[in-house]
Image 1 (cartoon, rainbow, N blue to C red):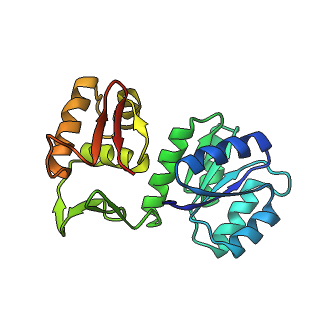
Image 2: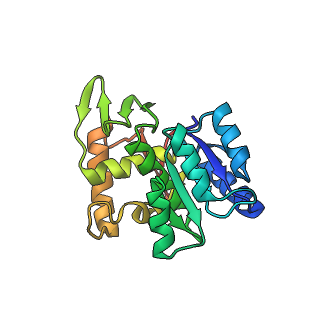
Length: 225
């Protein structure tokens, strides 16, 4: 299931190719253009859920493009740029950007920021069904048979990591990298074990024989697609 439509406004072919491929693996629908006029035409034709916008473009520039978009559309924008100085950051945010990330960036960090911006904008996913559970992405709530399952902040974040990577094996290292700072404290390997057990106790019908989050021996865990 595709999560959201992404418009990537970037004129570096290598970045377009690599980032588009990564975002598609993460279940985003990606369209890429290299300049302001093409971007505005694409937005009019197929309203994206979020825009990734480079500051330097082959035609126009990111700041003027952001201003033009925000004048007519309520679409969240994340600036991508090699300019990491404070002035560039403040300028981008003053133009109406919702977030800002400097190159080179880790694709996982960008995806995490994208999902955060989409949630704040009320554009992320709506309701998702998985393993007999209903996940209301806007409310940040998980339900079974109409009853809410009360997850802690870290349990919910861990659940979202699995949900966003359905069908993929996630190592313990990958999970730790995704959740270690969600509650402002360090999460170690033993703590991860405890939280996976707590999460299974809440979401699985039979936690001793889990069907939603399965252990892949010697490799990690996988949420069934």
